[in-house]
View 1 (tube, one colour):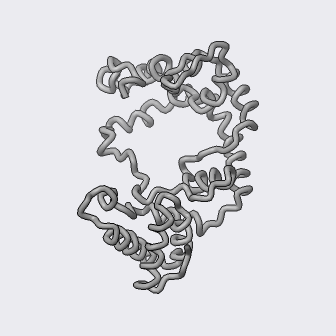
View 2 (cartoon, one colour; view 1 turned 45 degrees about the horizontal axis):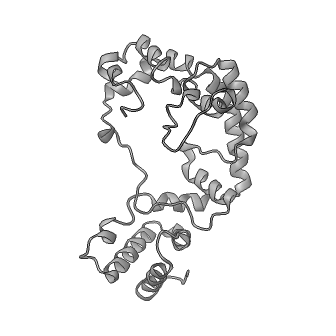
View 3 (cartoon, rainbow, N blue to C red; view 1 turned 180 degrees about the vertical axis):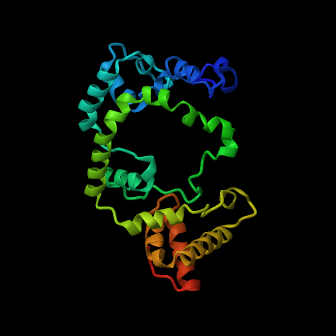
Length: 255
């Protein structure tokens, strides 16, 4: 994004296959990504000058871009870790979302039946194989700019593990949510195009759910239980979907 990086330092002009240019980027335009985890945890505490308003780009605020030492970043991030209510681990996104639900007492599950969660495929991001090779070719530089983060990771992993254990997450619930996001369960056009009547939408939702349940028969009850708690659809719509599933496919009453 042009508002996050100096466009004059593009992938082509900086020749990212040379570690010296990666080092230069992480020391200037992309300094926010140098020890990025620790920086985001610690910068608020380390800065003496914090100015934020509703128009502020939180990725380019001055206190996030300052030249803090690795020692200060690590120590301040670690001391503030106990104040973090919930950690999100992108490798365990469903467990992370369930933790948010448990911690904040959310009645509706954090699912998105309109998405398969693949928001940034390589074909859309424009990344080429030669671009992704930067990680291999510049490993030493990336490690240099991750020292505070690497020291912090064991503490983050421990905190995340405790968080998941306290949430008492069932493996079948994780599997059911992964199944819901195997592919788009619903299509946006069902809800926006006039040619789809309310009856059509109820039928399409129900048939999609039934197909998903048949593909994941060992998780069918968990899938439906999660879906019928989701308030992304009005209660009357969920009620009619449940009735359709019950009448046509002999499904259980959930709502």
